[in-house]
Amino acid sequence: MMIALEQRDEDNYQERDYNTVLHTQTALLTHLNDGKSQDLKNLEQENETQFRHIQNLEQEKETQFRHIQNLEQEKETQFRHIQNLEQEKETQFRHIQNLEQEKETQKAIIEEQNEGLRKYKIDDKYLRKQLAKKDRINQELLDQLKEADMMCNKLSKQLKTLLQKK
Image (tube, rainbow, N blue to C red; front, side):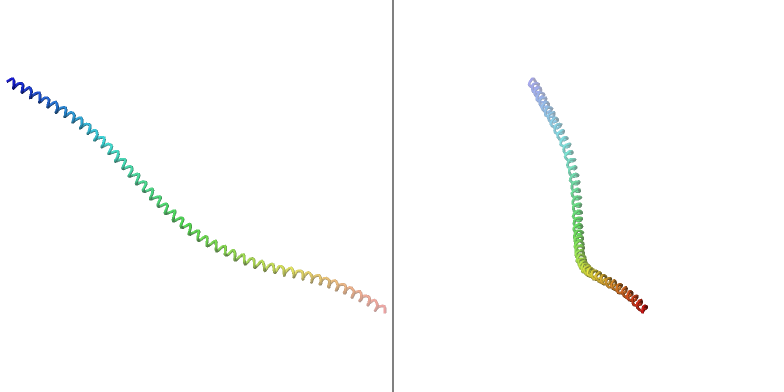
């Protein structure tokens, strides 16, 4: 019986050792699970943070994409505006050429008219000189005519006087 008691003690001792090992292993596993659980929670939080960060980046990417589209539309609008300005510039250039051509034509006409006026002015000067000369001649003739008239009157008086004396 002693052997049976010793065997029982031994069995109880082994069972206690086994339970202690199981308890230690369970505690270790619980500790490891708690650590893994905390790691998992940390990973979930990091994953959530990364997910929000990715969403923010996607929103920023979308905002930048819209900004780029707006810039491209603005660039297209400016390009069309530049084309319109170039067309307007071409129209104005043609208008300026027409005005310059008209100016040259008017200048030529004015030069012709000036030449004609110079010619008339020269003719006018000549005619004025001729007229002045004729006026002097007429004045001289008038003076001579007056002198002749006075002489005629004088002679007539003398003749009358002579005729009366006779």
